[in-house]
Image (tube, rainbow, N blue to C red; front, top):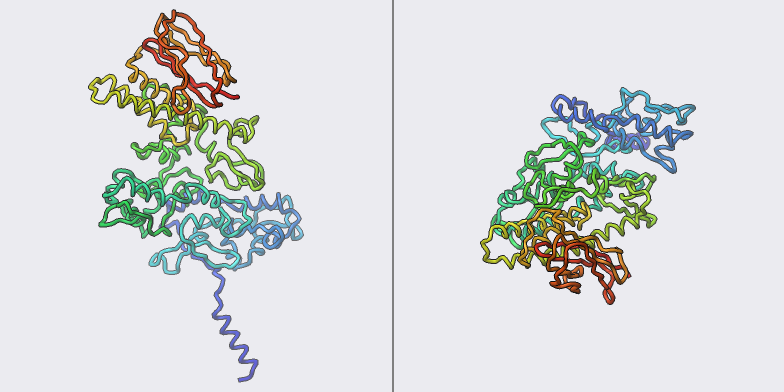
Length: 567
């Protein structure tokens, strides 16, 4: 055999062994068997991507040829995420060719009048962009995989979140400005959840079976709802057993995570129906079905409130609503503001993290690459800087911590005072004080989500505890004539005036407490005052700057007021 023929035959063998571009994705009509998913997809943005690309080309790529978009210095591979399988059209072509085939050019370049063409062949983000459907389907089931348009091959992925992150993150394109996946990884939704659950299991559920845990406190329902889709579909109890160690079938103090590679965290598909991601949806691990939510507020409230689990102690949603306190009037600090207004704020400055993250860190304050900070607060308060907003939040947290410390001390004292008591009135008073204290703490924001309401809950717990401790019970209606006015000036430096009004003569005690609940001054003690308005001066010489509380008892009434000392 001559040398030329040998080389020719070897070439044929090598060509036969080289993987062929998979231009021919499955041609099955998915809508025939998956009509629900297909109809949802038709309503989604995934089914309408060509005009978006055309608009961006006309705005940002005028004067550039298709090759520059795909391979140029500032390349942005529109095809890869907006219509990956479009390269299979027209008998199969490259990404550059697809850009020229689906978007109009003039003399070979895009212009400000570039628009979509050959629209009947544009696939959008079709089923086969995210599902590798085998030739013998349905005998063999599809796998999650991203269709890689540069290589015309499928790249398998481990889970749905990793699939989303191919285009909604920097997993494939490090310079991508759509970074929701990156933001999610930084958030509590995207990491650490399995360790948190195992810690709670080993502390609170020793001796319980996974099924008993789920019946008592459904960890899976909020911490990893999509884990019930593992292994072809399992129960919540089975998911707990799959993902956490047990001994003899029960949780122990040594319980730790296992199969960590399977733990999905609070995945993209926990809150987004992958076939219609724009719909506000909650994946219910109990039913393995999506439930459409009437608002984002209701979506958050499934796990950060008691909408799905009435006995949960995570009640941010309820506190934000400003209802549910015992004997405390309903109120909202920021009426009309929803969770996402603060926790999913997106900026309006191009190429900043606050806009690229799309709110998926759920942080009110976002640190930018240049060291600056973007604050959600400035959207509603344009005169406020991010630093001002942070100072306000810190002040609210300090005020809450101070009042919370006092409330805990007071409620504990009241609880001790009623040991052995059978007085139903006092017991009810204590129960309400305990409830309001626990309710305020269950918000878990440090008093920020609804500052006025949480302060009122804590103050009510203090007042009711004081009534029990002192043996003075004020059951008269508000407006009985006894008033403690806000001190002035406030904040103050060294001295301030405390005013109060009495409807009739009474024994009066005025005490000052610090933020730890420690009594530091007695300004007045059992002095009989006449009815009318009175003023007492508080001299804070020698005391450090901080928050102080004035507690006033007059006859059968108790009032408490917060004061701020600033040197």
